[in-house]
Image (cartoon, rainbow, N blue to C red; front, side, top):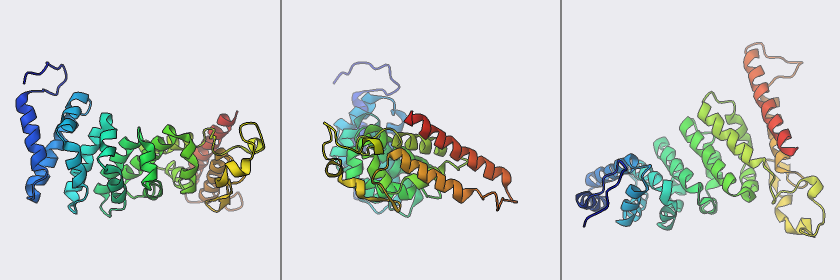
Length: 302
């Protein structure tokens, strides 16, 4: 079958299509070595064509997604990593296909893997899905697990966990409260102390999304009857729930962030009566970072 020429680096030919079909078939092999080799090749081809929607669409059209999703049920960590990486590439433009194939619950389950490489690429795949299908990720129970991974010793895991939370809150600000209730704020603030620029950036963006005005969490001045909200207490049942030991009732998202940042400042910065003699410069940097966050909160309230 003749195909139109493409200006992209991904060359579409009938031979290439046949090779891809063979790879997908081998990815279902009962031979673990053949299966791993095939999935690795698929991952490599998808990575090379990551910016090419045609290349990704071709793999989707020949049934690669369900096969890759099925690989997520394996106990082979190497296969899990390759499958997650391949699915991440597909989420760039075909995230819905990955969701419909049932990947999200399996990926969320793998967030609990003791293998850091598995966690790293699993979170990366969920990061791509959350950019366009955030509710699927939230409803699968990912948020508490992502919050836990914010404290991972692997900075890439921390970065991708923060970025996934960023995508969740950016796409649907109304679920920011669920992210707060899962305890995300303290570890996100903690990540702002990291020397890793990418980790700091993703954490700060996630915090920025959370402190945006949120219709599901009214400010104290808004927590009163109105035409749109005649019964505040009844229309916002979650407002009485606890967040990190603090009552959410009558608080705004910004107020919750402010409390966490101030708490972090108290923890990391000695009082005037007990100054640090070991690392005064580091204490000063921590104080400046926390002051900067509080400044952002104030600016968003204006």
